Length: 419
Ligand SMILES: Cc1cc2nc3c(=O)[nH]c(=O)nc-3n(C[C@H](O)[C@H](O)[C@H](O)COP(=O)(O)OP(=O)(O)OC[C@H]3O[C@@H](n4cnc5c(N)ncnc54)[C@H](O)[C@@H]3O)c2cc1C
Image 1: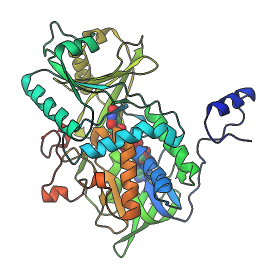
Image 2: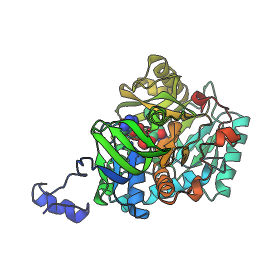
Image 3: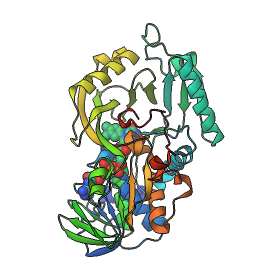
Image 4: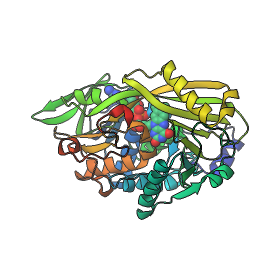
């Protein structure tokens, strides 16, 4: 007998029989001629969409079509930070919905995703930033979300290893969301894939979408490297490749693609027990359970589809780290990598219909899409099943740029590389 459900009992039983009874986490499905729903992109968002479609909306005959392997995209490349510390009304309920789903995710999908609510601390360094964080914290609390303002002494007690004494940008305090934290990124992909597979979803890897067949203004399905796959409804969740795939349907998206890099140091003893972000530069850091310091910074300034970064950004990120905590200079960098970010014009995502009938879009996640994964999947599934936006995602419309109804958290304007 093979083991289906993960539990302490299953662990003990498999220990007794040499671990011979574990099933593959998901089937290697071959494409069927047609499905009710085809999701393009087997990243976190595509897999979560398929899962919630099957689980909550009773969707049947669902396929996720992935050009590479599950976990090979941004879902397995990010710095694993989750939080719901947003300011604007279009964003806060959505990201809090995601946070609540993270809190119950492991039980829901029966998978250890190492959800760790270790807290996210955003530092501020001057009065203007303090004012902005007070405003953000108040907005969060008005939405029922936890937020605490720490003064410099409280920050010093929490994270004593930062540079408090002779810093170029003295630390004045921080905004803390205790329920924020980290989630093991590839476990999220594997967990959703496994849970969706158990509900009958076909996860089709090594199957690149090369065209979208449109007849009479309606999307009929996708041309792929493994043949044509018909779709009752077609959902795109291609993250950094959204513009390229949407272009196959003649759509030009308000999105630019940029590389974002992540860095991991050699393993050291535990000393950072939360996520810390620098307010005077772009730098964020946490420590993995294996002891590696996991950190990142800005995106590369130019458009690219290359999944690798460049030296100037490495220098910039390391400078941010040195300014915040000079002791990081003694740690050796173990590895770094890049992922392609779908940077929208206002820094907020799109979950909407497209002008092509039967074609739906989930894109524009910029570099904050990992934390959104569960809510993005839920809301996209809702849209696909019901043909109307989920109540927490009503602002993420594709035409908001034409209407001037942008959701610009940073107030940067139509400058995707600055969001
Ligand atoms: C270095 C880095 C750090 C980050 N840090 C954070 C963070 O700390 N917190 C946070 O919230 N977010 C973070 N992000 C952003 C987050 O990872 C992304 O916004 C999110 O993962 C995107 O959604 P996804 O998981 O569906 O993307 P992906 O995993 O990229 O999924 C998209 C999939 O579509 C597939 N695809 C593309 N084209 C085709 C095609 N033609 N046919 C079939 N399949 C196709 C791709 O192969 C890919 O697997 C980070 C990203 C990076 C790269």
